[in-house]
Length: 389
Image (tube, rainbow, N blue to C red):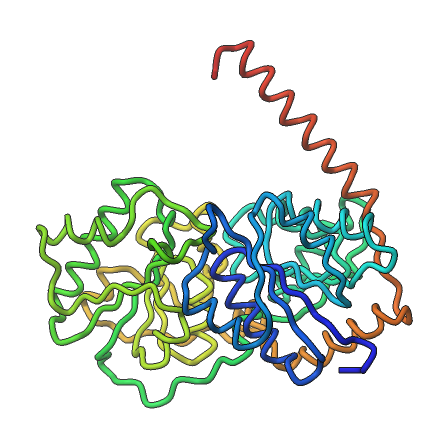
């Protein structure tokens, strides 16, 4: 990177954001003088594992801030570029405070760390005032441009980058057929109801019993040491025990390790909706996307409809061959970020030195924020009047 950019700050919340930050920081480490990481905490603890924290410490200095004080802390730290790798209303507030508190504000970069499961436009609105938004796929870019056109905002701050966590993705070679090691990628709230989660667990136990010679790894997002942005009321590990009568089949393994550690020797990847499925697809790992619970927006699996990877548990129990993804679907939904890294660096340099114009979406964002607040207050008033709550 040009000598004009000396310092880079990453502000990080959950596990998927930590993985994205690690990959982007690794790609930048030889192009900047220093890197720092501001890690969000709650009750004094980060939202992700010690292993993920150690990976960040190997790249730069790490400091901590309670989630409630992050906007203050991030706006106080002087830097050239701020990668704001978190989401929610606090993201927009942080950007406003950075611009209010610093005479020369850093270039602010936001991202979507993985597949946008649902409420895509809410995510767009929270990132609207970023100087650069890293967009994951061509389809997401079209959606963002349409959203901006509809609300009268500029979409010039969008950069088609690809999934940040795929920066170091290496193709899997030499996998076994039939599979010796299978991974189910769990999303805590997908599906959400107890009955559907229990049916999912029962199906996984049935698969493990049907193929006792295969290792079945259950990749969980939440544990005591690692918290996900996707929370759920019914942990899959508990339901697996119930489904198996209190003792899991010997070939079931439960893990909360980062996806790249699990995928390095997986022969078949199974899931309903997850960025890890995109990881697997990009690494040429046979992947089956389950449609047993339907294809609905809240499940987040509509992204995979038409991919050619649709499957069911009954088909898996029959051990049918796993299809390859549709080339058209892959081109629209999976973009290789390595090819875009130089474009990102160039844009950061030009925005920092003033040779490129920063996008002014502040007024639009403020109007939408106030409108949303008025709408929420109206809903509360109506609810109280009608006795709904």
